[in-house]
Amino acid sequence: MAKFCGNCGKPLGENDEVCGNCGTHVAVNEAVPPTAQSRTASNAINGKKAAVIGGALLAVIVLAVVLIKVASGTTPGPSTSSTSSAPSSSTAQQIAANSSTPDGEPTPIPAAKNETLEGRAKKAIKELDVWDGSVAESFDGGDGSVENPYQIANGGQLAKLAQDTNSGIDFAGFYFVLTSDIMLNDINGWDFGKTPEANTRDASNTSPIWKNTWESIGERSYSWDQDGNAEAELVKAPFAGNFDGAGYTVWGMFCPMGSTGLFGFVTGNITNTSVACGSIWNYSVSAGAVVAWLQDNTISNCYSEDIFIQSDTGKLGVQELVGSICGFCEDNCNVLSCSAKNVEIHVMHALRSEIGGILGGSFSGDCNISNCYSECDIDIYGVASDTVTYNRAGGICGTGKNISNCISNTNISFFEVINDDNRAINSVAGGIAGSCSGNIVSCGSNGDISGICNNNDRISFGGIAFSVGRGENDTGNITIRNCYTSGKISVEDGEKSEDVEVNGLICNILTDGNNEIEASVTDCYFVTSGSDQAIGSNAKEISLFTNQVISVSSKSDLNKFDTFMNWDFENEWAIDNKVNDGFPIPRSLFEILS
Image 1 (cartoon, rainbow, N blue to C red):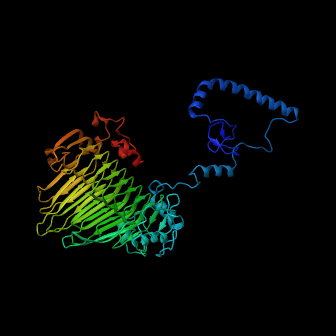
Image 2: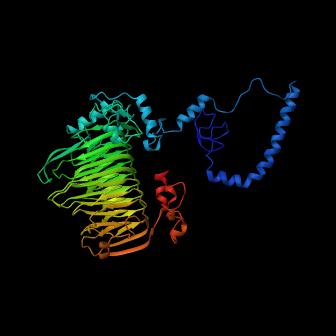
Image 3: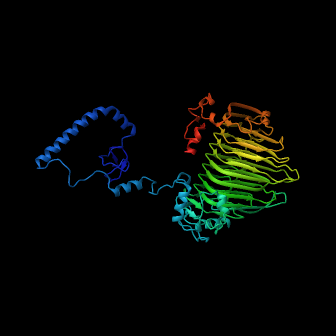
């Protein structure tokens, strides 16, 4: 018959004398274990009675012990040898080991939740061997099943996955797991007091030596015409498997021309993967530290830290989609619970670009982004062209569908472009999204947006987004709710161009002629910076409902409850001096910032 702890009710092994749950030596009960509710009720009813009886019983026991010792010729006092009911050190270690996963293996904590990046890097430098550039003949173990995934423990085995995938093995239905951090290049000289760009470009002996170049896992490429339009697909070799980084980090990734991230083209699932202290030099369509191009699947719990990305497709005008986590999402994708910190993105000769702190851009389907955090610097250097140009950037995504529970501390800057022919450059940006074709709910932006307007340039900056809209055939209304922005928006416009638009929340709300769609902007606030108008004038052409949209003239007003009369601070919003600099924040964002 099963045995249960008489103290806490947890099951015991047949030979256990110590409860692995409460750690005490207790009597056992071979009947059914007492439930928490029954124990609570019993304690409530009998508490006083137990205290009285227990006290009397204790007095009787003490008196009996004294009489026995006196009878045996001894007196009470310190014992020269004693036994204890507390578990021994070996027993305590066994209890600790059994309290992790069912197999006794500790569950790795995601990298962003552990110690500082510098502390983790020092540990990795001390404990890991640097990859020698070779490709392993086999993985470290496993059979690829969900119960026993292929195990990857070093750079050579990770390179084998890249080599096999790029040769045409898509690994659909197979599972992979990292079992260790991996050091692709020696980062011993990485200076955490410098920016990722400075570490990457520094030619001194203290900078990392990019000896090993990384070939992305999975690839897709096209040929292009002179106007930057895709002509033909040259290569299509996706990774279609399931990859679990298990909370480990890939250090020192160096992607030169042709490689665009840890993974290149993915139609499978990527989760629990971190990339740190690396650089990507992109001359292709898309780039992302974790995944460059994701099709019809999910990225979750992934992190990028101290990464420098430079994207330059030259003057061909090829579209650039660049993000700190993922460059491009195609069809129905999810980007969930991802974080980017201290990532620098430079986009050169930008003609048609989608740039974001988490995701670059998405098309042809639903792309849902949720519970993400970005802390990046995005610099865009546009280029004049005879064709229509546009560069879109957002603190979370350049373009996306539905965005919820996200925070951006990303700064976006558009730099001056020499343009002697008076050809226009369109630059648009938002603190959360450049453009969004769905809803934005419970999101906040604290980053700055700046730009320079030259000649016939057109600039549109919104604190939350440049535009939010629906297509002609879309259904469902547009919702912007529980959002805030406290960053600074500025435009250097020496010629006072009429093509500059700055709004506190959103510049445009669009429905593409679909009169059945309505839009609502509710419970949002912004700090006036560049404009005291929340929503652009173009939005007035649709059915728009606004309620509790607040502008404040200074940040000092943001931590005053009086500023937000009638807002729901019991369920939806909160003010905490220790979170978000004391500014109001949607309650759903507390976990991201903690």
